[in-house]
Length: 133
Image 1 (cartoon, rainbow, N blue to C red):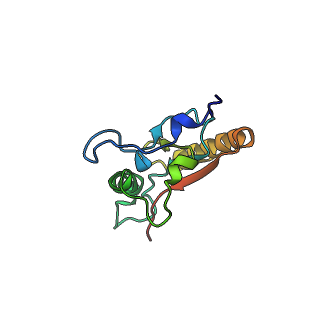
Image 2 (cartoon, helix red, strand yellow):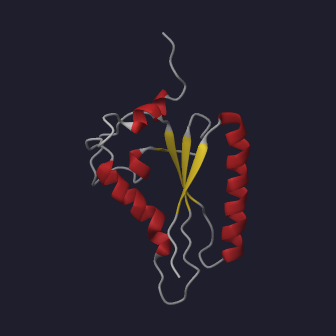
């Protein structure tokens, strides 16, 4: 029997929606994404406006909302995409709040790392963020 290396990242997660790690659709959290087909990365950036803060909570809110959908019936496809696609959530870009230069530097550094790894692992990156003007 041959076991795919991605199996650990595939399948339905049945954790309660009110407990457990808050990751995108209850996918595994990690930074070693060599086995992932898709990598989720959050950008909690809120420094574009002075009078309407809150966009920095976007990645967390998207993850929280997706946890409600992680175990439900898959519609309209008739199959669970997570049975076919290995997805890993790598969390958010870290930076000192209020330091735009550090945010963009860390984002560029992480993006470059993803590009280097993608050439080896053939994975895609989905960046999760919200911003308003």
